[in-house]
Length: 352
Image (cartoon, rainbow, N blue to C red; front, top):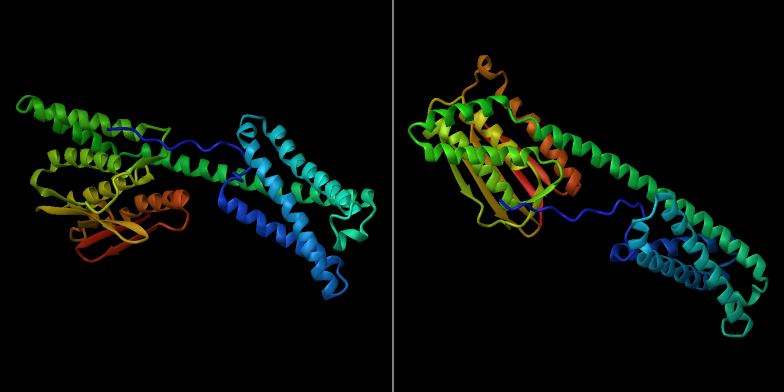
């Protein structure tokens, strides 16, 4: 099975200002800053609108040039120490404001810029005010970006710990049952036993892998088929699996170990307690905004003495999968549970 890992995101708190979304945020934030500065000093509407036009021009130029320089400098900032990249990111807006203020002053003195600037003839005062404002805004913004970056890192570490716990939680009974099944096949059906050992090795290699957080849907399906093939050797005709995923994008990136724990629950809580044949249905559906994957398994009659509360046993893996989907995709993915007296259904909604 081919491994597919996403490109690692650089560990730097300065965002990529080359992205259109970042540019839009810069423009909106700069305009709000200009409006605040004018609102604090304007005496009437006519003067205020005039000041807003000139201040917006100044602030937008300074903000966009600063963002452009940070965009260009980001590949170098990534390889620097955090304190050095923070210092450079802090100084760039201040230097830009210095140059813009000086340029605007000399344009005014030469008659190339009029309006509100005409009354601002004291370069030292203007330069001091603008540099102080630039330093305050730059410091506050960088502090916010650094705090947000650290919070995201901590959250990612927590979810990675949960993923590691899930990777380590393959039930011992599954391993022992699989090995006993393989042993029983070695003498009479050595080819099937060899194939089962390869599936088992691949399954554990994938579950013990620590470096990858995303995998393609086709790789995850392959893993699930290997898992179900092992269970089918043990359960025989009692386990029937129906795959209907033709409508899905096989290259869709999803977190590792999303489908396998749900199928493990379907086997453990749905098929094993049955005395007759049971079907697990895995169906995929493509909509305009998302892909839906539905896993349906039968439920046996209530038997508390066998496994305790069978239906509540599903919830451990369900909660883990839901939290990891939210960690990767935010609130967009939905995990819906539908249960009747004799059927349990889990539906995943993954964004395109």
